[in-house]
Image 1 (cartoon, one colour):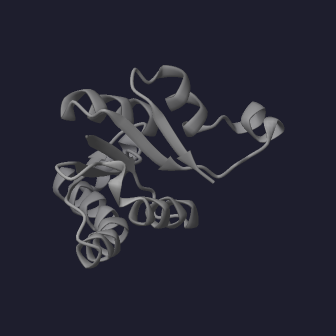
Image 2: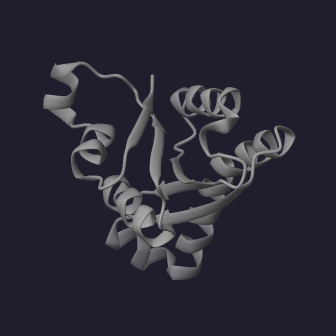
Length: 140
């Protein structure tokens, strides 16, 4: 089974990683985990001032801050994985990566905002669950 694991570097990502390694049979013996980090786009004016090379370097550096510790952790636990870093809106990019990778499941940590938090600021996890065509495993 192939799993897209959405990683934002938060403590909720760490909890979901802990769940993943303690349930190593989740992906199965021939499974693969695609660690996905989505970076928010830089506003157009800022991008225009800095140039595309600087913006790309910034996004790469920010993604590595999230992905490098995860890579070390998964290697230590002998979990097959690959990392993907993209720029865009988290929900859209998670769903796009799931289709592109032909993943069977999406896994992510959730901040666990209550109904009021979701109503006020929305929830990436809620939108992914609503729009995904594959099962979604949320770890709180």
